[in-house]
Image 1 (cartoon, helix red, strand yellow):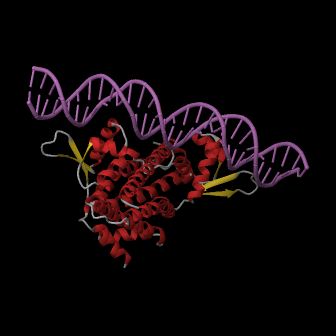
Image 2 (spheres, helix red, strand yellow; image 1 turned 90 degrees about the vertical axis):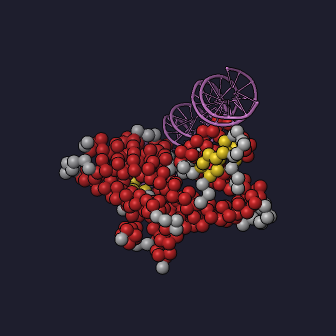
Image 3 (cartoon, each protein chain N blue to C red; image 1 turned 30 degrees about the vertical axis):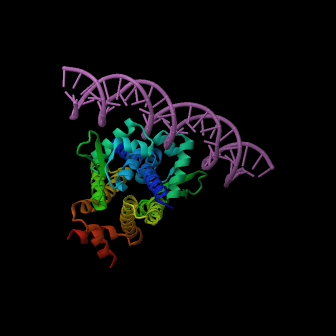
Length: 167
Length: 167
DNA sequence: CTAATCTTTCAATAATTACTGAAAGTTTAA
DNA sequence: TTAAACTTTCAGTAATTATTGAAAGATTAG
């Protein structure tokens, strides 16, 4: 396999992986493209490479910027805007973990908290609801704390931790 | 808030959370319902509670069983089949982690491995592709090892580990 | 100021994904 | 056996989500 094939394979895989995780294909592919591109790309570049429309490109680039994993850059003397992705995989992981916590885990915790705080009326089904949602709450909280650990520690926390865990 | 409201809130939240993660709403809701139900439920029960069709219920129950988080049970003297969900949240987390690794991480690792093994033709863009996919490979592998840790350790590994990490 | 260049927005449409319901299939009681 | 009770399958349809492309909105060079 050489460059062009490898690049396409990577972009496509990243795209379908994204879909699997509720991130749309175009967004994941744009990210993949920028991630492996040594230089910033313009909107035109992205459109051409991925064969997607101007509107689609614009909207998805905006989302990626909102997520904090793609940046706008200017090139001296150029009118157009250019885009780069976060190149440090650790930082990338950190940003994504943080966003997912904010968007998914926090709201879930909130609901679980509410549900498991209902008044115990003494029936079996109420007791079960309270017990199970409480357990899920604890699990989700634990997962969130782990994510936060990843988010807030220095560069290599993940690797260091693993070494510790594996010994 | 009392029982019925709390139950509905929980089922709905679990449903939309599922959607966010690429698991369809009905599947997530059925799981939620079984998870908080003290007793096994029949297909009829599930259909009525969630207002979904027989076909939909059947297909999604099958998927949940495939995932390994819902079980068929028989009730003595009853013709119908009944369903229960895995009730232990740790076990639940373990099963889900294992499935996600198998379905998502492993195939990704495979592609990343292929892509980062292409021949270095000396160009900047090829070098960048190899470098970045290699880094992603390492990250994904690390994430997978962590998941496996969760999967393969005894009951309370997750909690114990956290205590260690937090000290 | 204004025309050229570039970006964003959004209504229309396409593509994908989920759901229904009825028919076919399966199991078991009698 | 056979028929009643139950489950699965799947073609058709509905609902959701993604994409396009053209018009409107910005920005800047001259």
